[in-house]
Length: 119
Ligand code: SF4
Image (cartoon, rainbow, N blue to C red; front, side):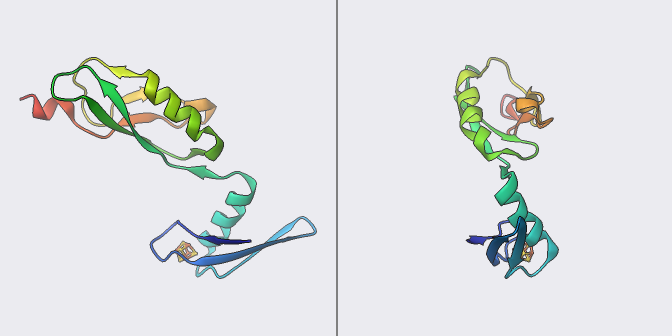
């Protein structure tokens, strides 16, 4: 299997093979590439960005992100969760909207300071 390591901007092209339950990785310039490839095969995760609707004047939507990585198979659920949320008051950047997403310990936080523009 071929994949591109997304851990750093080098974007190494990795070749990943499985044999006798062992995962072998080549093409990586550093150890992080090997960890990435093994993670992709066993429990792929991603940091996710998105937006949440707001009723605050001047902010129809507010950008948000996870403050860590969540399982890739939870990304669709996260997008659905974001669609169900509505921010009703100005919030500072980094406000936690949802704690412990899907039991991962990762939080959904705002990435825009709403108070600043209201001054
Ligand atoms: S293998 Fe190492 S150097 Fe290559 S993209 Fe991944 S992190 Fe960067």
